[in-house]
Length: 344
Image (cartoon, rainbow, N blue to C red; front, side, top):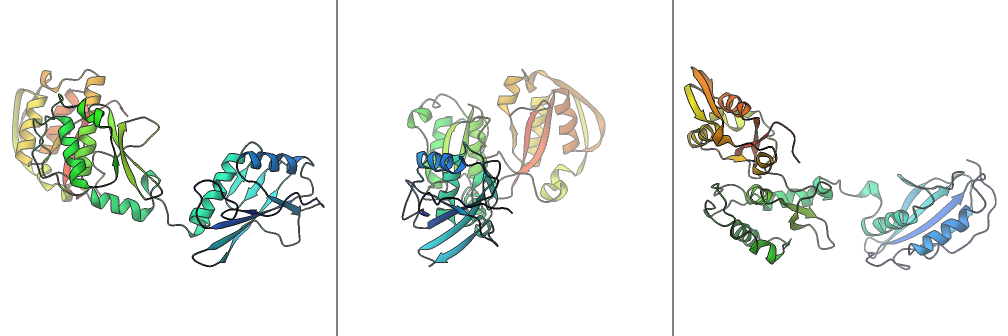
């Protein structure tokens, strides 16, 4: 790497001694080595842009033999100092460990520095899981949401069911009371008693277009109930099983003599659900979107030996529907029924 002499423009940036709002006790010292073919005005531009982003000082200096992009941890465990070394290259980019910032990315670089101050070097952090949570946070949240629904939901108002599950969970959860009140006249048709709170809550929220969104916060994970948007992942209605279907729900795969003549798909779902004693949950949003009414579609299956999973597959296909075996947070099986056409 080639370097040329440059003027040191400012003292080392101290993140913690020199802080952004919300930063932690960790301190970041940033030094940027300038390559010989970097534009002459790049340093001044970066110092100006970083200052506007809340970084008041950055040390740009001539490169030295043996300089490497990296992070060295010093100080103590309670008061760590993260010595960050980066480079400014010919494209006016600031290159830091595992990250590259173009001019105009000063806000993003400032957030990267703040992230290092709060969480330490990227390679030392706990891996993240779904929803941007740490693996341990996600595992604990899933364990908490595995608590069973201990009351009858069938015929209860949707707002009341949501409020009861929220109160039983006792987790940090944001929900507008006016939103719950607006759902008081909407009834839950399904019996979700015994199902895990996470899956049941996600299902009750889906019909009115709402979702349960986990988020990170300074105090740890929190849950937000609100409008489900395509750009934000919501807690799912069940999870793909880790074991084969016959092991998860063997009753679905046992052979029986079946004979169905001009029976509605809705009735087939009701009968199969009663016999296998596994919840069959309909994606009412998708059904409404594509104008599908299982009660108006009749199906006939000639007398033969077959499994309930095959019965579901054939009956649902007649109504442009499909099923998927899932499990709730406690590992109990459920059957998710949605449209053949994709629906978010």
